[in-house]
Image (tube, rainbow, N blue to C red; front, top):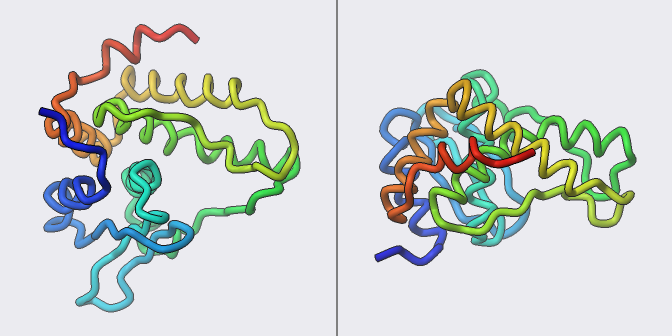
Length: 178
């Protein structure tokens, strides 16, 4: 029987997969998501996702799964972020940076049996090519399956697939037409 898509499941699975090795916790936040590295040697790192949203948690875990050791020592991984209302150049940079984490988020969604939709995150800015960005994210996910998934992403995806009783999606993803 499949579990409901509730963020508490993600918190538990994340802790089972990663806490002991990485001292990182997944935390339901009140506002915008962010990553907070430990501020003292005794503290935990925190991945804070927005408003208890399941999809937000998957997205923030995806960022963590591809962030290297040095990035995981920086607030929000040291990533550039321009808020809603980006111009064409800023939007192109956003999509370039977001292609990889959103591909991992799509994998997580497949493994959890949950819906996925790319986020262009620019509601009050210029018109964006959502279909084009979706193709780019899909191509990135296919590339990951052909060339190898980031190890933490694969570990978490397999835990999701097991918990939600989903088949491993490699064959499905590789069969998608671009």
